[in-house]
Amino acid sequence: MQHVPLTADGRFSAVVRPVFPEQPDRHPVVEDMARAMEEVAGSGGGVTEADLIAAGFSIAAIIEHGPAARKLVGTRITRQIRPIERVPEIIVKCLEARSNDPARLDGEPLSDEAVTAWRHFCTARAAYRLDPWVSQGERCLARLRDFLRGLRLSERAANQVINKVAAAQKAAQARRAA
Image (cartoon, rainbow, N blue to C red; front, side):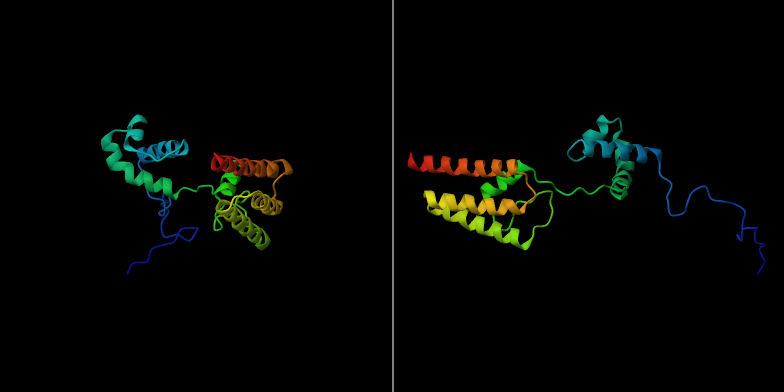
């Protein structure tokens, strides 16, 4: 075995690689296609071949470089955003009143008291749907008010939710009476 002299920095060779071995050489079309895919996906919806053709890529380029570009898009760092429920979404959830899907503000976890208050509201709402009389409706709105106190909603937003639920109850009562 032949002895290979070391360089000053302790390497066997003075040749330095231009890129890291972990980073594979990418075709420039892959980079461009990945950028185009991110733009199309960012504007809403998935990326189709028609979108890539509209971005100026040929069918041959899509077939050859598409899988590598999709993989590159998937490996890039993405920012995770928690789902934010605004007042309209909270109103919809309160009108549906499903006990396993409570309304939340900014996607934050609910306390045990808030979950209990939500279940009480859902029970009252179900009772009102079965037997719609005035006292049941008032009890339903009181339970909703108790639940909304546990959320970080402004007084105005909480009143908006309560008014929408009350209006829906009144409309349902009017439909039954007609």
